[in-house]
Length: 375
Image (cartoon, rainbow, N blue to C red; front, side):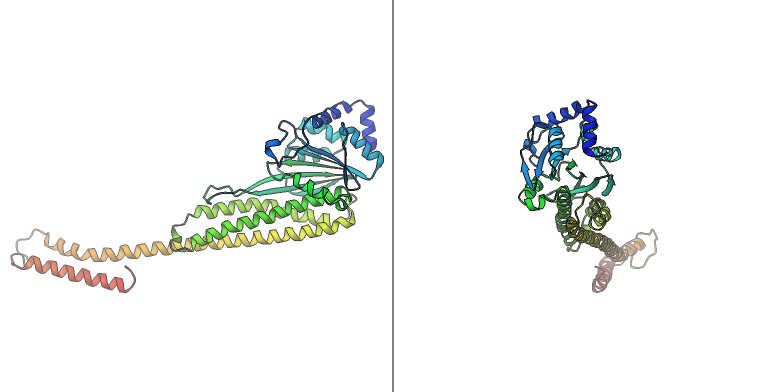
């Protein structure tokens, strides 16, 4: 059944009331984006709802259902509805209005999904992992470096529904950028899907550049003069955060390849060339992550080698000093025995002679160890 037919069916059954309730909720809240936390529409999952025709933004009506009916009646336009962490109840009417598959709806509400692209009839469902670099004054063993979120996209012939999870990855600036390029936006929902994918992958590259600075700092500290004293917990923390980043970047390769190569009705062939460019950028991010992983392994091994060398140095010093101290210990131990007849026991110069022998022996040992680099 087509989407328009499904909408007429819903209207005939008298169930549009719930949809209009969602529309009124969207209409009551300011049309702002969560990129401005101070002006966020707290308490509502609806971030924005805009209608476009021929790449231009047209005034939206007071009712979401009416806007969708108008777009489907006149053709050539689409509705872009943006949501932020909707609940099951908030998303139920929207899913019914756009005839979204229940499995995709469940994924969009629950979140914590792997990056993927799935087709449900004439609707394309895509999941992107968003990443954000967490600024910190100094990297420690507990510093959070990478924060992740998700963007789910439902793309049909005349609609785009975006569902965002997390406090970053706002699509407000992206929407403004697309509106400044009407020739691109005129290509329909596929252009929005490409712009989101490009935006997400660009964030990957930005985060990898920022992470590289942390890795460079750790590398500098490890190979400094007191590198053996560096905290290895920072290296493990970077590897842990790098793993979180890889979970977002690596699985996206296959979905982007499908969008760039496989014929999909929602995706115009002209847009597929743009997806190939995004795929190339993603490949660069993957290569950077692989290089970072190898570099961190090398840094960790170098640090462990430095620790081993430092321990050997300490053991040699301890052994050398123990050998030096063994001379007076031995002599003093001999003359500490309670025997009546012992050499030099009653000699007038015996004490000075023994002290001199001990000093000369200790000095000779010290110079020998010093010459060999033990002290």
